[in-house]
Amino acid sequence: MFQNEIKDAYHDCVQDLIHQPVVRSMDQYIQHGDVDCFEHSLFVSYYSFLICRKLGLDTRSAARGGLLHDFFLYDWHEKSGRKGLHGFTHPKTALENARRHFELNETEQNIIRTHMWPLGLPVPLYPEAWVVWMVDKCCTFAEVAGWCRTLYRPHPLVPIMNPVKGR
Ligand SMILES: [Fe+2]
Ligand SMILES: [Fe+2]
Image (cartoon, rainbow, N blue to C red; front, top):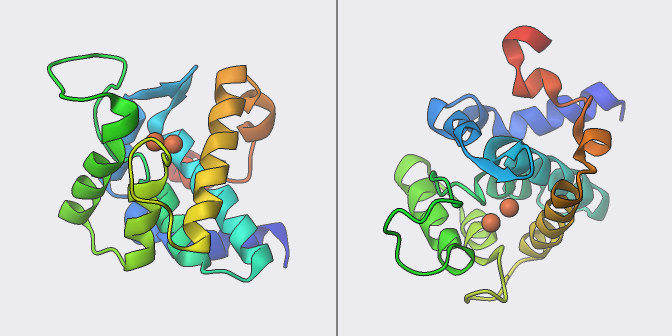
């Protein structure tokens, strides 16, 4: 499969989510370094999709769960009266937000709820949830280390991130 076909196959998995203003609003919040939460989630989603495709797993659930795994919709650097530590509580918040806006299957819900394991329970139940769990850790490390300039930009997902400018 050529790069463009892979990109289109990825887009087919997430197209009903990725252009929604509420999903795009994740770009208002910095995640790590200078990477915002939308960009972080997009790359966790995309690389999880690619790995699941190689392994013959459920690419659609991995892409969708990955895109919404950090759908908590606040600036986690600010305290602002939230109860509990962000690292432990945000998967539950992200899942509640995601269920409020979208219909999710069991795998997608498990991906979101367990992506910070072992910080909080439950344990990932599906192979796709373990893939997203691992990719999230790798992307976080790359972002904190400042490697995302090389890994993410420029990148074939730019047209998906900026459809007006990119297509
Ligand atoms: Fe997270
Ligand atoms: Fe994340």
